[in-house]
Image (cartoon, rainbow, N blue to C red; front, top):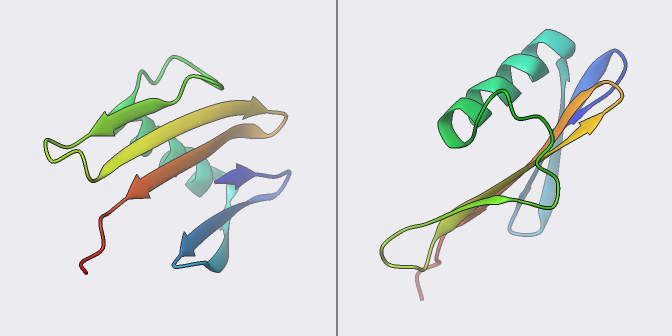
Length: 86
């Protein structure tokens, strides 16, 4: 999630295909706060370089969340790893 002056870009990459969408500033701020509430301290802004990692008991899947302050809001990167079935 990348905030811009008027709107923000949300990009998803699923199996090497990039999907882009644009959201308004209030929606971007709400999405960022909801994700941060579930994973990290909301008051802490910009934990760049210190991603929050969670690993499931199987250690084959997990999430990593990192935020970085920018001029127009907080940039958020979330990596979700899900094992593929063989």
